[in-house]
Image (cartoon, rainbow, N blue to C red; front, side):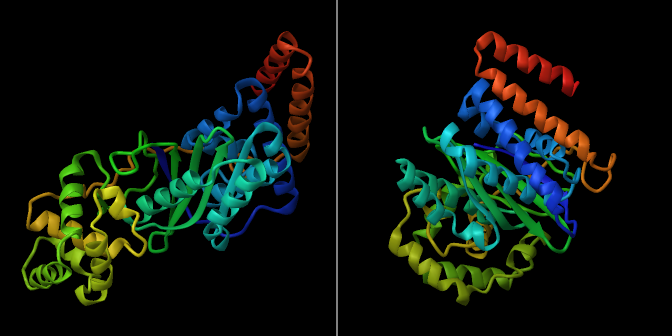
Length: 355
């Protein structure tokens, strides 16, 4: 299920090299310690939690609320896992921009090297991205995508979209699910809500998903005729917004494809290559207006939060303290190899330090 969404303002600049180098080392020690005490699956579960992820980025010294926290934190984690991943059984693929589009290739390479079946991971990666860019249309274009996974097949996706108009980014968190299209999230975290969205995976949009799938199997000429008729009507405001960017003639090709494929359910429809936001928006509009089966028009993001970091808020990064934290974690990891009793003592000392 998707476990959360975070909205973050876009900030310029990037992490200075001296900070990013420390972030990589600290990430390595934190992940190694979690794997020792709780197992590799716990790393994946925690990274799927938007609150824990945000706290991790803050502990590592990045901006308390900027969009860069996502890309820099995942970048540091990926570098750390290149070093310790094979040892603890946790791996990461993907990244920002062009790197995100190479995720399937990365997954295949990792799979071949370490004997992991990459195909379910590739499907999960693609569907998570498709849901947050097409099935939910909230004004954010996905530009950063990473998938974290274990040898056993447990995975989490952390991806981020950008809304250039509002200058905000929105981060989406997923953890392994068997159902990508029926209320896949358990928490939504944001500072800024959109006034108008289309959410076809909302719990109360089940009838819309059914009707949309049935419409996709209709003769394309019939769908396009209905769309052209609707453009001539005086519809409520939300329908005008839906129609604004839809040109029936330009999306005919994808409707021919869905007609030929005859998708059996909404997930199969969503997985068809070439089906984008405008095509799904057109089907959602017809589902609502003709058959009275609307998707959700409410932004699913409802909570907000904040912490502290790199830009001097609540205080500038203390390099000496940062290095000391890494040293303490290193000692805790070394002592954890002495046995269960010693391991717990080391973790208690770490807890006292963090308090």
